[in-house]
Length: 451
Ligand code: FAD
Ligand code: NDP
Image (cartoon, rainbow, N blue to C red; front, side, top):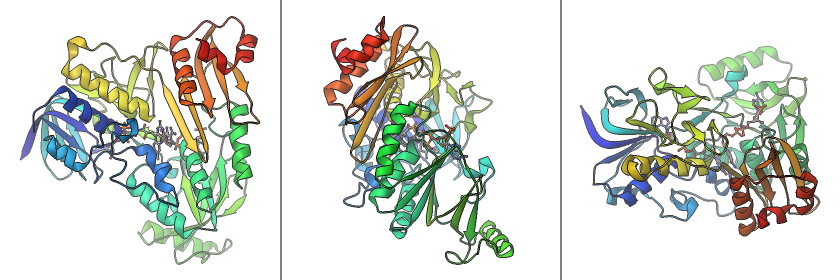
């Protein structure tokens, strides 16, 4: 039993939505394209989940943030897919793939075959258990990857109002969720192993600015350590006393048997005990590549593609978080975990599939951004080389450049205008030669504007 399509997109996230839009713009017939997604809803703008979705007043809810509203394009509601003859196979997990036979087998037992496959399976949240800590199944421990997670997070957050949250991880999820928790009147302690937040991107000086602002909002930071265990309660909060080892063991055994369990305290490696009404975990992701291991070439934890987003099998493309693609600007293969890259790589793959003669190699300028409280930053390029800070770090507009081998390769700006962000993007793409970093520091933002 099965169905056959010309094009199949495996995964129904950001990249799938943008690919669908591109297919319709380029002209496909009804019933040529199918999207298979484990999620029960049509593709949506995932970034909304840690921002508008968590607001206490007028929160964003579907259908308002279906793709492709994030780039002011059409909003692709289920009705839109229907009108365009695109088959949406939702709430359906693909459990195996055979790229030689060009088939996918769903968990419901259906075989779906394709001529061209686009892999857009994104990534999953890393679980604490992968770091040797049990407790992810506790009722008040939250991860954030999809709408179900976000709905659960909102419920737990509302029932923790006035209480304490421990946020594990100082990356994107940690920083954005901590801000949302504060806005929802939950007291926040952030715990992460590095010396400062957003350690993979921010310089200590940039991180200091955001940490000071968070501290002013009441957030506490515990750095340079990780959690070692949870204290749990299987029958109402604080039921298990910290010294009652037997009760604790019973509670944990209960959670293994599926009996609901609640975390009451977070215990850190240095022995510190943090009382917690809820825990948010954001400790990174793993790309969903497992269906294709042994069938396609992998690199950097993702599926390796060429400049056309084509994998080692010519009928299979990969886009978004799962794809490791050549970044021309850096002359090396990278896997990026950001929405702009998902949107653009998806559109590029469709262009390469539908119009191979006119589609060159993907020429992408990496772009990351975040919005927390009333702050908003953007980063373009690569954060390698010498760092040149500029602007007023006691005010609201400041930034940094990265200069590598005598060229500008990366630019960060907080509090810029649309034109200023466009200017740093353009300057970074052009990689101008920097002869004098002291002069670059003096010029600051004016340098990018003048390039
Ligand atoms: P996803 O959007 O994750 O979609 C993957 C889809 O594949 C999912 O629907 C999944 O269920 C499905 N799937 C996976 N395996 C299977 C299977 N076997 N069978 C069927 N379906 C399957 N980036 C930014 O640049 N800025 C932001 O502000 C920002 N905010 C974010 C906030 C949150 C809470 C999260 C989680 C991410 C955020 N990101 C942000 C990152 C951005 O959302 C991702 O880079 C983007 O979603 C990647 O798109 P994708 O289509 O590759 O993967
Ligand atoms: P990140 O990779 O951004 O951050 C993970 C953080 O957790 C790092 O600080 C990491 O430290 C730390 N960490 C790792 N292991 C542990 C541990 N055992 N205990 C405590 N801390 C630990 O991932 P996130 O989970 O924050 O984000 C998930 C995905 O969502 C990413 O792909 C991200 O790009 C995306 N996202 C993007 C947003 C944006 O672009 N604005 C917003 C929200 C999500 P270390 O660096 O040492 O490993």
